[in-house]
Image 1: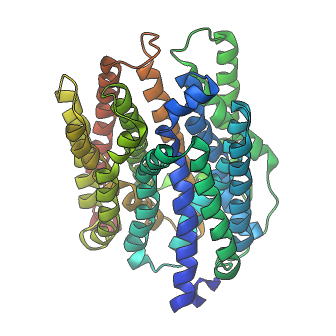
Image 2: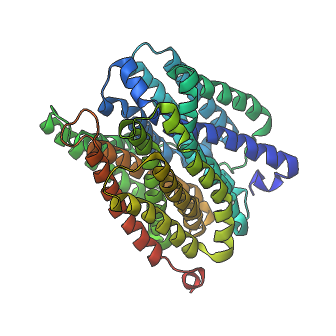
Length: 459
């Protein structure tokens, strides 16, 4: 039996508080740089397609680390794993602060991504493990408050910091907070997962690099001067690597990532719903600040502060939607969320001209609020559909797919903003982005409609 049942009262409270503090800060780092893109482009004399690798590359490396997290949890134990993640993030952040050139900044971001990629599925697995099944919706609502709100808050914090200091100041904030969390973790974090040691299948780990190759080629689309024979070669090798990874998992006695979870219908729908809602959230937090600065001509500080209402709305709704999912059922909650997301993109599609700052903010609130009804409730739905021994693999699959789809969404949005080989995106480019993501979220609504009610699933 797991030590999880022994976490009680203040010990449990401090454990969860420390865990969520670390997760919140790392989540902020995912989206915080979007507001700083113009500043970084000027500082390092780089293009928009280059600077966006600070976000896209970050998410790609996360995708490689996430499938390894179940093995790490089973073999290392949660406390040493959590401390390793914090130290890795700190070292990467310090490297970024001291970096004299952009390649070293990318290396530091890669180190941060290693830590975040391990932590995201692990913290969800731990929360699901220490929480009774009937209370999981509420618990994951709090997790959604941390993860979703942090993504929305990232550009806001970035805008505030950039107003009063340099871009390095943003990373000093991360460094100080994570160092404090690491000190606290030595006293409050304990091993709550049962140990199940096994050997690491290195061939599976190597094959995971195929995900990076696929999204790297996607990101090249629309760029000039691309060596397409080489790019096609990378794509073919990467696809073959991913296929080898998938087929190998079914042959291994102890797979790195148990893909049998895809045999559960409700889990499959949950994967795509959480991914589509995440695309909407991450694209809003990255594209909207660019729209504010490029089209509306506001400062990075104002563009960050314009995201505050959406972030507050998301933060308020996340715990509420978790409780609603426990009481009303997942289908109703997920449908409400997808309708809200679709309505937000729909408004942007229907308005032909430029939308002012005061018009964009309610739309951002609508899309981000819809995410609160979808992302973490879908994770809980997926976990509830699986047997206990597959929960860690299920959360790893969901978070991996979510990051893959998010990375693809960012790459597609960046591509659309550069159509016509423009150096700076035009209003027309932004409208193309709105149309594409409106169409994408129609699929999400259809998936939510296809969900079974709890009573239907039981029968």
